[in-house]
Structure formats: structure tokens, C-alpha cells
Image 1 (cartoon, protein in one colour):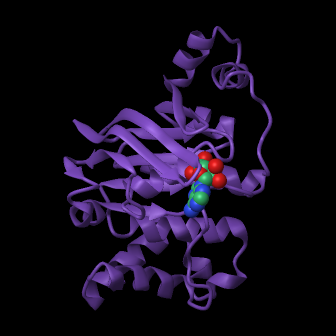
Image 2 (tube, helix red, strand yellow; image 1 turned 180 degrees about the vertical axis):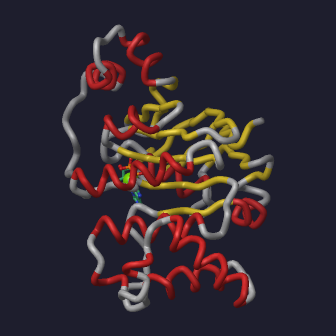
Length: 246
Ligand SMILES: Nc1ncnc2c1ncn2[C@@H]1O[C@H](COP(=O)(O)OP(=O)(O)O)[C@@H](O)[C@H]1O
Ligand SMILES: [Mg+2]
């Protein structure tokens, strides 16, 4: 079954074509990566799919619901861990999770039960009373993902979940993401090639707002006739290797 289908999805900001005529299909239960250098259009795509911004043209359906005509239905079945981690700095880990349950309208008993389970699943018990602002970047990201999953979305968006983390924190988060794999549909964006290669069932490479290739890491290597994934990525992006203001 199809979880997400985009049809000519596009977003233009004045002179910038941030996303141009995106056509892709993501299956239910897939862990799908949008891979591209900074400025490729990944966040703009996530924002359109999660109804934070409206497309300039085109449409996308999530479990059959259009982001253009049924954004409220879409919002019910998704959740997002945004690129700029959105945790409330002065609330504790537990309070952040309960706040998210409140936003989704759970009663206090359900909120407590869900919070207890999520704290256990994400191994947050040691820090549940700590204010979010004192947590390291890795723990804040973990909390941000926990806050997105606590509402049991059918589709979860993770925008650059390991941006700026050290290698150990990154590997920890990879393990958490791997545990969720197959249970729900996950769309992850990253500019880390090894992250897409390690985690994703399929990868869509975006460059300058356009989809340039889609497939498994192995398929993309074959397509580019490259010995490793990095060479395949560079070749598919047109040999452009410079990263914009990282
Ligand atoms: N609110 C905005 N106003 C103007 N331009 C934007 C805005 N958001 C993104 N852009 C531009 O759109 C392009 C794609 O950005 P973005 O989707 O954030 O890329 P990525 O997430 O892949 O780094 C970039 O050129 C960026 O500068
Ligand atoms: Mg981004």
C-alpha cells in the first residue's frame, strides 16, 4: 500500500525554486531517505508533506489524504521531529512528553501511560526530571523524536535527526531509528551519505530542488556505475561536491 504520493509537488520562494516538480511514491512501512546537500530542498519538502507550508503547485497525498484539500486529516496521522529541534527548554523531559500528549488531546491518564511507555522505550528515565535546556544535543534530539512518536503517527518525519551530533550520539540515534523501522512509515532527511546508506530502505537524491535519482543504495551505485555510495552520489548530483554553508 502507498503511504505517500507526490504529484508535481513544487515550492517557489520569490526567485528560488526550492522544490521543483517532485514525483515520488513511498510505501507503507518504508524507511525512506531524502538525501542532498544543504539547500537541496529537503526541509521544504518535509514542510509541504506535513502541512506546515502550502505547495506553490502540485499536491501530495498521505494515506490518501491531500495536503492541499485535507491538511487537518493529514495532521492527524503524522508527526514531525523538525530540523531545528523543538523541545520546550524550561520543561522537563517528562513535561515535554506530557505537553505533546496534551496538544493531541489525550486525557491525563492516557497521557501519563503514554509518557511512561515512551520514557521506557527511549531510555529516558535517568533524565526524565531534567529540564530540556540542560540536555546535550544528542539527548535533545532523542527527546524530540520521542515527542514525535508518542502520538503514534502513521507517518513520521525526521528532518536531519543527527545534524551536528558526534559519532557516538549519532550511532545511538541510528539504533533508535532502526528499532522503529518497519512499524511505521518514516521519511528521514539527511546530508550524511552514510546515514542514508545505513538506515534507509530506499533513497531519493535531491539536488537544487529536483529529484535526480531514486532507489536502494545498491541500485544507485549500479545506476551511477560507481564502486561506492559517495562516488555514486557525486556522479548523480552532476559532479557537484561543494557543500553550501554547512
Ligand atoms: N522561507 C524561505 N524563504 C526563502 N527561501 C527559502 C526559504 N526556505 C528555504 N528557502 C530556500 O530554498 C532552498 C531549499 O532549502 P531547504 O528546503 O531548507 O533545503 P535543505 O533542507 O535541503 O537544506 C534553499 O535555496 C533555501 O535558501
Ligand atoms: Mg534542511
